[in-house]
Image (tube, rainbow, N blue to C red; front, side, top):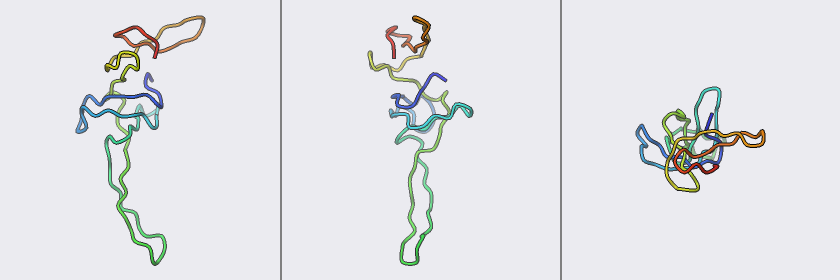
Length: 101
């Protein structure tokens, strides 16, 4: 998978199209990622103690990795990701500016 935890991404499809955010979690087997403040869901949480109130909690849900594009830190544009091998090490590169990500 070409997107890793900590990358900045741009959502290119779905209800949150155009939003930017940081990748919080990656699920490579399911090909899904969790991005902060994108694809927010609400969940009702019951009170745990007798004198405590229940509440509604908002959390970001996973979305398909195909719905996002990585934002290159060098050229600040959403771009595709490629790979290059230097000295036996594989690294990611931006397809627009050819700089290492």
